[in-house]
Picture 1 (cartoon, one colour):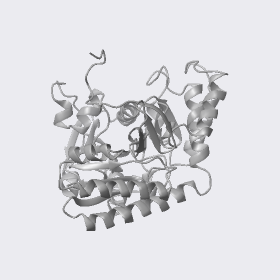
Picture 2 (cartoon, one colour):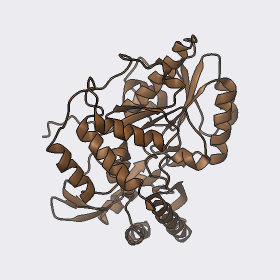
Picture 3 (tube, helix red, strand yellow):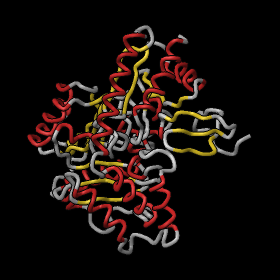
Picture 4 (tube, one colour):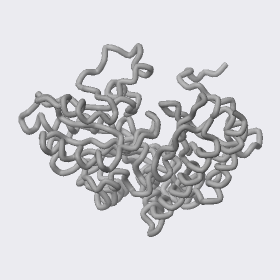
Length: 387
């Protein structure tokens, strides 16, 4: 009997090693990994450049504390702000922590400018912002919040894509609108560019903040460093995590100069966040992702993946209802149970992960090549033929 509390429904498989887009189980079986630790292993398994970065830093310094200046942290923050809308970065350890920091920054901003009554945040059905209490009730997924009351107040939810409901939800108490640029857990639903631009204007017109959660879709996953770049909009606050650490736990909250005014010494902190070891890995990840041609290749391979999946949809229209996503964040909405489909994929030696709305998420590492996509399509084709 395991001593691990049963908060996960785990597959009966363990992995002993990984390389690139493949994992090898303790039984010696090789699997094509299109989970990537749920969009975490952005450069695949055991990327030699990351391995070298970890070795090098581990022999110098792991952790000190944020009461001291950390050069590796200063460098990573500067690179993130130089390549985004942001002016400042708060480093934490996870996506949920980054989301919590985002909520705090938004509320503290209005408190600082003398409008403390503006403390409510509008969110969207199907959202996922993390597992901490505030993040749970921000998303308000009944399956996730059941038994964790009393609810954390301060959130008003509207249906995904309902512009009129969104406008009606804005009140004198609204501080911000928070949404994932691409809903991952909610079913790989992309917020279209033609919605993001008016959303930015709606926030400006009402004097409220725009928080774009890019924990899953950020750091190259869509073919740009941030997914919101496709719409050419600038948010006020953006939580990130997952891909920035390439498998090492790193989270961050990016903010512009305007909203940063309330965050003074003592308003936020993290014991482990931004330590030298984590920051050296984050910098190594950016070394690769920001290299000329890398993101263009993600776009090219992502478009190829979409084309192949849509061809598969035509052939197996009895199984696949819709192909969704952007870049290397892809989803297939099924006409059959997604759990059963994932079981068959697993038997065929490919790993994927479920999402809401009966979707299977496909999240290959950003280093994936067309030949790996061809292998994935071969396995998905075989799986479809079994239904």
